[in-house]
Length: 209
Ligand code: AMP
Image (cartoon, protein in one colour):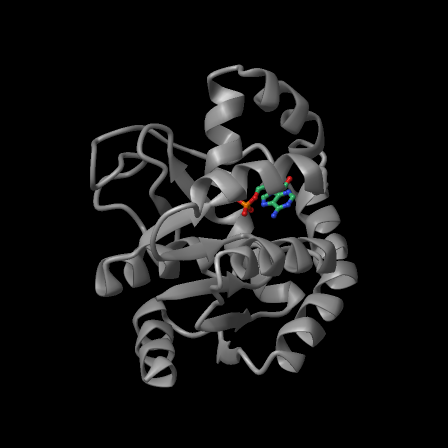
Protein backbone atom coordinates (compact mmCIF):
# COMPACT_ATOMS: atom_id res chain seq x y z
CA UNK A 1 0.00 0.00 0.00
CA UNK A 2 1.24 3.46 -0.95
CA UNK A 3 -0.21 6.39 0.99
CA UNK A 4 0.20 10.15 1.24
CA UNK A 5 -0.56 12.14 4.39
CA UNK A 6 -1.35 15.78 3.78
CA UNK A 7 -2.32 18.63 6.10
CA UNK A 8 -1.14 21.84 7.70
CA UNK A 9 1.83 21.69 10.06
CA UNK A 10 0.55 20.24 13.34
CA UNK A 11 -2.33 18.35 11.73
CA UNK A 12 -0.97 15.06 13.06
CA UNK A 13 0.74 13.71 9.92
CA UNK A 14 3.79 12.45 11.81
CA UNK A 15 1.72 10.65 14.45
CA UNK A 16 -0.60 9.04 11.88
CA UNK A 17 2.35 8.09 9.66
CA UNK A 18 3.84 6.03 12.49
CA UNK A 19 0.48 4.40 13.30
CA UNK A 20 -0.25 3.56 9.65
CA UNK A 21 3.25 2.28 9.07
CA UNK A 22 2.85 -0.21 11.96
CA UNK A 23 -0.69 -1.20 10.96
CA UNK A 24 0.09 -1.93 7.31
CA UNK A 25 3.75 -2.80 7.68
CA UNK A 26 4.85 -0.05 5.34
CA UNK A 27 7.73 2.38 5.54
CA UNK A 28 7.02 5.84 6.98
CA UNK A 29 8.89 8.52 5.06
CA UNK A 30 9.02 12.00 6.59
CA UNK A 31 10.80 14.58 4.46
CA UNK A 32 10.98 16.92 7.46
CA UNK A 33 12.73 14.22 9.54
CA UNK A 34 15.20 13.44 6.74
CA UNK A 35 15.99 17.14 6.39
CA UNK A 36 16.38 17.64 10.16
CA UNK A 37 18.72 14.65 10.31
CA UNK A 38 20.85 16.26 7.60
CA UNK A 39 20.88 19.57 9.46
CA UNK A 40 21.95 17.78 12.66
CA UNK A 41 24.75 15.93 10.87
CA UNK A 42 25.79 19.16 9.14
CA UNK A 43 25.79 17.61 5.67
CA UNK A 44 25.97 19.80 2.57
CA UNK A 45 22.30 19.20 1.94
CA UNK A 46 21.54 20.00 5.58
CA UNK A 47 23.28 23.36 5.51
CA UNK A 48 21.40 24.29 2.32
CA UNK A 49 18.02 23.13 3.72
CA UNK A 50 18.53 24.87 7.08
CA UNK A 51 18.32 28.33 5.50
CA UNK A 52 14.77 27.63 4.38
CA UNK A 53 13.58 25.55 7.33
CA UNK A 54 14.49 28.17 9.91
CA UNK A 55 12.31 30.70 8.12
CA UNK A 56 9.42 28.26 7.70
CA UNK A 57 9.90 28.22 3.90
CA UNK A 58 9.77 25.18 1.66
CA UNK A 59 13.13 23.70 0.70
CA UNK A 60 13.56 23.88 -3.13
CA UNK A 61 11.69 21.20 -5.06
CA UNK A 62 14.84 19.76 -6.75
CA UNK A 63 16.41 19.00 -3.37
CA UNK A 64 13.39 17.24 -1.90
CA UNK A 65 12.68 15.41 -5.17
CA UNK A 66 16.10 13.71 -4.93
CA UNK A 67 15.41 12.67 -1.34
CA UNK A 68 11.99 11.30 -2.16
CA UNK A 69 13.17 9.35 -5.18
CA UNK A 70 15.76 7.59 -3.04
CA UNK A 71 13.36 6.94 -0.16
CA UNK A 72 10.56 5.32 -2.13
CA UNK A 73 12.62 3.20 -4.52
CA UNK A 74 11.50 -0.13 -3.18
CA UNK A 75 8.25 -1.21 -1.65
CA UNK A 76 5.29 0.42 0.01
CA UNK A 77 5.23 3.60 2.02
CA UNK A 78 3.31 6.30 3.81
CA UNK A 79 4.59 9.76 2.93
CA UNK A 80 4.48 12.44 5.62
CA UNK A 81 5.04 15.94 4.26
CA UNK A 82 5.39 15.22 0.55
CA UNK A 83 4.03 16.51 -1.77
CA UNK A 84 3.52 20.04 -0.43
CA UNK A 85 2.89 21.86 -3.69
CA UNK A 86 1.56 21.03 -7.15
CA UNK A 87 4.98 20.65 -8.72
CA UNK A 88 5.91 18.04 -6.09
CA UNK A 89 2.62 16.22 -6.73
CA UNK A 90 3.49 15.99 -10.42
CA UNK A 91 7.05 14.85 -9.64
CA UNK A 92 5.74 12.08 -7.41
CA UNK A 93 3.23 10.99 -10.05
CA UNK A 94 6.07 10.79 -12.62
CA UNK A 95 8.32 8.76 -10.32
CA UNK A 96 5.52 6.27 -9.64
CA UNK A 97 4.32 6.10 -13.24
CA UNK A 98 7.85 5.21 -14.39
CA UNK A 99 7.47 2.04 -12.30
CA UNK A 100 3.88 1.43 -13.44
CA UNK A 101 2.74 2.32 -9.94
CA UNK A 102 0.31 4.67 -8.21
CA UNK A 103 -0.80 5.66 -4.73
CA UNK A 104 -3.73 4.01 -3.00
CA UNK A 105 -4.98 7.14 -1.23
CA UNK A 106 -4.24 10.75 -0.42
CA UNK A 107 -5.26 11.35 3.19
CA UNK A 108 -6.06 14.96 4.06
CA UNK A 109 -6.03 15.75 7.79
CA UNK A 110 -8.04 18.96 7.96
CA UNK A 111 -7.30 21.57 10.64
CA UNK A 112 -7.63 25.36 10.70
CA UNK A 113 -5.19 28.04 11.76
CA UNK A 114 -6.32 28.15 15.40
CA UNK A 115 -5.83 24.42 15.96
CA UNK A 116 -2.49 24.56 14.17
CA UNK A 117 -1.15 27.37 16.35
CA UNK A 118 -2.36 25.62 19.50
CA UNK A 119 -0.75 22.32 18.52
CA UNK A 120 2.58 23.71 17.35
CA UNK A 121 3.12 26.13 20.20
CA UNK A 122 2.61 23.31 22.71
CA UNK A 123 4.50 20.65 20.74
CA UNK A 124 7.66 19.18 22.17
CA UNK A 125 9.90 16.66 20.43
CA UNK A 126 12.47 14.21 21.70
CA UNK A 127 15.96 15.41 20.87
CA UNK A 128 17.09 11.82 20.26
CA UNK A 129 14.29 9.71 18.78
CA UNK A 130 12.09 12.51 17.41
CA UNK A 131 8.87 11.35 19.12
CA UNK A 132 6.26 14.12 19.33
CA UNK A 133 4.36 15.24 22.42
CA UNK A 134 1.78 17.94 23.18
CA UNK A 135 2.07 19.55 26.60
CA UNK A 136 -1.69 19.30 27.19
CA UNK A 137 -3.15 16.58 24.93
CA UNK A 138 -0.26 14.11 24.73
CA UNK A 139 2.10 14.94 27.62
CA UNK A 140 5.10 12.76 28.50
CA UNK A 141 4.84 10.71 31.71
CA UNK A 142 7.73 12.67 33.24
CA UNK A 143 8.21 16.38 32.58
CA UNK A 144 10.56 17.01 29.65
CA UNK A 145 11.60 13.36 29.31
CA UNK A 146 10.74 11.11 26.36
CA UNK A 147 8.62 8.05 27.33
CA UNK A 148 10.29 5.94 24.62
CA UNK A 149 14.00 6.61 25.03
CA UNK A 150 14.47 8.89 28.05
CA UNK A 151 15.80 11.68 25.82
CA UNK A 152 15.32 15.36 26.56
CA UNK A 153 12.26 17.05 25.04
CA UNK A 154 12.84 20.28 23.16
CA UNK A 155 10.84 22.78 21.15
CA UNK A 156 11.51 22.73 17.41
CA UNK A 157 13.24 25.87 16.15
CA UNK A 158 10.47 26.36 13.60
CA UNK A 159 7.70 26.11 16.23
CA UNK A 160 8.11 29.76 17.26
CA UNK A 161 5.12 32.13 16.75
CA UNK A 162 6.72 34.03 13.86
CA UNK A 163 7.75 30.92 11.92
CA UNK A 164 4.42 29.19 12.64
CA UNK A 165 2.65 32.14 11.00
CA UNK A 166 4.84 31.87 7.90
CA UNK A 167 4.28 28.11 7.66
CA UNK A 168 0.50 28.62 7.79
CA UNK A 169 0.67 31.24 5.00
CA UNK A 170 2.65 28.85 2.82
CA UNK A 171 0.24 26.01 3.51
CA UNK A 172 -2.72 28.26 2.64
CA UNK A 173 -1.12 29.30 -0.66
CA UNK A 174 0.18 25.91 -1.77
CA UNK A 175 -2.49 23.50 -0.56
CA UNK A 176 -5.42 24.15 -2.91
CA UNK A 177 -3.65 23.13 -6.15
CA UNK A 178 -2.45 19.94 -4.43
CA UNK A 179 -5.98 19.16 -3.23
CA UNK A 180 -7.35 19.80 -6.73
CA UNK A 181 -4.72 17.49 -8.20
CA UNK A 182 -5.72 14.53 -6.03
CA UNK A 183 -9.48 15.25 -6.20
CA UNK A 184 -9.10 14.97 -9.97
CA UNK A 185 -7.28 11.67 -9.59
CA UNK A 186 -10.03 10.36 -7.32
CA UNK A 187 -7.70 9.49 -4.49
CA UNK A 188 -8.92 11.82 -1.75
CA UNK A 189 -9.79 10.76 1.80
CA UNK A 190 -10.70 13.64 4.14
CA UNK A 191 -10.62 13.37 7.92
CA UNK A 192 -11.19 15.99 10.63
CA UNK A 193 -7.64 16.33 11.97
CA UNK A 194 -8.79 18.17 15.13
CA UNK A 195 -10.05 14.90 16.58
CA UNK A 196 -8.09 12.70 18.96
CA UNK A 197 -5.32 10.70 17.25
CA UNK A 198 -7.00 7.31 17.84
CA UNK A 199 -10.30 8.52 16.37
CA UNK A 200 -8.50 9.92 13.33
CA UNK A 201 -6.67 6.61 12.91
CA UNK A 202 -9.90 4.56 13.10
CA UNK A 203 -11.55 6.83 10.52
CA UNK A 204 -8.61 6.62 8.15
CA UNK A 205 -8.55 2.81 8.39
CA UNK A 206 -12.30 2.57 7.79
CA UNK A 207 -12.07 4.83 4.75
CA UNK A 208 -9.15 2.85 3.34
CA UNK A 209 -11.24 -0.32 3.23
P1 AMP B 1 7.71 19.16 8.75
O1 AMP B 1 8.50 18.40 9.76
O2 AMP B 1 6.96 18.28 7.82
O3 AMP B 1 6.84 20.21 9.40
O4 AMP B 1 8.77 19.95 7.85
C1 AMP B 1 9.66 20.88 8.42
C2 AMP B 1 10.27 21.76 7.34
O5 AMP B 1 10.99 20.95 6.40
C3 AMP B 1 9.27 22.53 6.49
O6 AMP B 1 8.85 23.74 7.09
C4 AMP B 1 10.11 22.78 5.23
O7 AMP B 1 11.07 23.80 5.44
C5 AMP B 1 10.85 21.46 5.08
N1 AMP B 1 10.06 20.49 4.28
C6 AMP B 1 9.43 19.37 4.71
N2 AMP B 1 8.81 18.75 3.71
C7 AMP B 1 9.04 19.49 2.60
C8 AMP B 1 8.65 19.40 1.24
N3 AMP B 1 7.89 18.40 0.78
N4 AMP B 1 9.08 20.36 0.39
C9 AMP B 1 9.86 21.36 0.80
N5 AMP B 1 10.26 21.53 2.07
C10 AMP B 1 9.86 20.61 2.97
